[in-house]
Each structure stands twice: as C-alpha cells, then as structure tokens.
Image 1 (cartoon, helix red, strand yellow):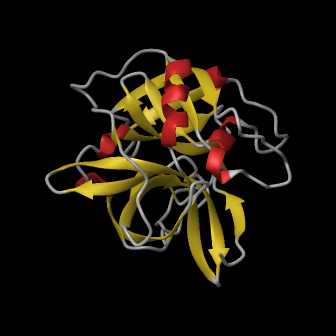
Image 2 (cartoon, one colour):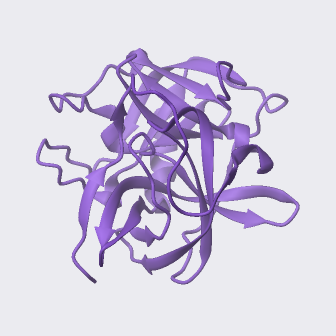
Length: 236
C-alpha cells in the first residue's frame, strides 16, 4: 500500500459553514433515513459526526472522545447529539451520559490514530423513538471495489449534512478501509453507507481520518466487526 499521511477529521466548533468539498456531493436529505446521522457538539468547542444505531446508542470515532488541545478524555455529559440537524433545528437532540471507547484504542497527541480501533459507542440520556428516527442498520464491511457513500457534518457544513455518493473502496483490510471519499475536519465518526434500492442504507464503517495517497485525497475508515457488539452491550 502506498504511504498515507493521515489527519484526524475532528474539529473545533466556531468556523462558519460553507459548501462541502470533493467527491460527488448530493443533498443528504435525498437519502432515506438520513435523520439518523447527526452532529456531536462536544462541550461547545469541538464537533464530530455520529449515527444512531439503537434508540439510545450512537456510534462515532473514538478520538472524538478526547480533547484535541490536550489529549485528555472529555466528559461524556458535555456532549450533545443533534440528530438530523438541518440549519438551526435538529430532528431530535439528546445529551450523552456514557461513552465506551474500543479497548484497543490508545489516544496520543502525536497524531498517530489507530484506525482499526477508532470507534466509540455513546449512550443517550433518553431513547429516540422509532416514530421520530429509525436507527441505521448495521452490515458487514464492503469489499475492495465496492461503491459506498459518506454522510458528514464538517467545518464547511457544520449545520447541514453533506452526502458524498458513489465513492470507491480502494483498499479493504481487517484494520481499515480506504475510500475515495474526501472528508473534511468535523467528519470524524461519519457513517460509511451502502445503498439499498428503496430502503434506508446500511452502515458499514465509520470515518476515522482524511489522508493523502498517491497525491490524492482519500478517507480512512474503521471497520466495525464483533467489537461493536461488545461496545454496545457495555454502553447499554
């Protein structure tokens, strides 16, 4: 594999919203069940993206649970999940009360993020009714050559999600996926989705960082695997 220069895609809040970048952008609202994707407001200072995977559980990147300034773990209760945020209003908003990070993840200030373990499950203070938002369906990781979409919030679209469609999986390993989707700061934790005709897409991976590979922008994504089920049990 060509050498990658990876940068975690979490970001400080406070940068104005603007148009997204790269890929094949499309309105996120055109995707069935898009409201299950939301913004994590982390203490009013930083943001990531997350997905509802159970009525009271959301999935995001593990490194989002650490202060980007000093590397310390953030207080989960300082985090708000804004599901289906579109402009100034969210479809549902909940406080986080518990965060469970993959046991193999080791956060450091060196920028060396372990993509393969960069997932965390957060428990909300109260469930979101399926009548309001249905959780995303989980599925196995895609294979090399398959097409995927990424839905994300970022510093360029901080209050409205951006969809990049028809990205290609150019590498699929046990420790990570590499896709041609180009993500921006704030997109950490974004769902990697596979479309299903006439149905809501399936969540197959989670964005960990953006990178450069062979002179072009790519994204690195964490596989879910059996570890996710264990994290969900622990968070619940």
